[in-house]
Image 1 (tube, rainbow, N blue to C red):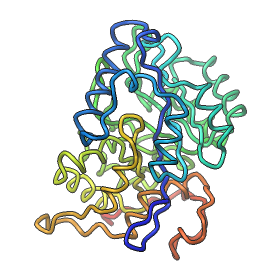
Image 2: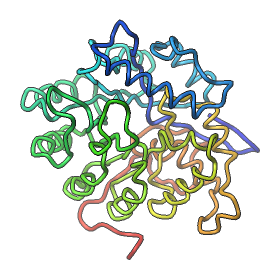
Image 3: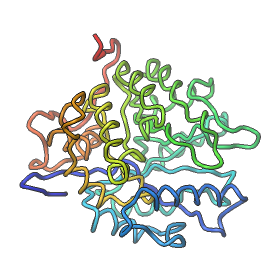
Image 4: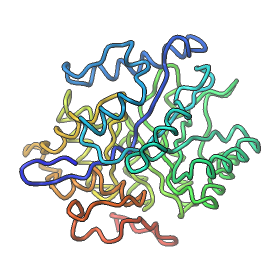
Length: 346
């Protein structure tokens, strides 16, 4: 919990990872390119005093994660969103077993989401069913630009992806987190395009689609989709660190999201360990859209509370302490309506 000026904030870090980018795990040059690109984002967008040593950044482990999130970082609950990247790393980039063990040891603090790749066909679909049972999955993380053999990405609208999403509905894996944001070397920018979110959101009304990184640099495209599709949500990973280096740019991002998407469909995430949550939470609570940017409404305390944790808590059915709830939040669980969709344009 974070407290400032008498206001208390329940914090859910909705996008964290345990990764191994060390040279010993790199399968080829692309493994080094990938972790180096991550480190460039980290050091260029973080305050100088919180920049990590490179070697520590490539592999930091569960003990440091717990300290950075829950001891120092004000986080009440965090959700693992792992990427596999098996073409770049010998044992994968996201550390499934270590993250799962940490989740089991800290069930009140951590939720483990897994990943799937529809290019794995029937074998992967069978594995998804086993993973759902083993991990008790409520969500998955998709990386549509991930390389696999000769393929340099896939679309959410591919036939096999639809079969996997149908299985998610059947299995109760209702929260689909999708990396749709800035490219990362060596992945292809266009494989992260947000356009395919539109169709699946319409066709799978029982699922929530959390577009991580809110589609950047395609923010306008994302907003036009999310305002029409009631089950499309915005994840602030990568967007929120600009609160430090380019605050007017962040004001534009959050202003557009509030106008088009609404304060109930935006989720805070540090994207740990790209960034640590402590300074992000502090700066976000203090942040106000500049008065000169008159096209945007103020960022209210209520909106900040929803974005920092209450929205993700509703989506994942987390038990928020009574004193940290808003009077009008209603039930903890989120129900996505089937059928007709309402638009802010109507």
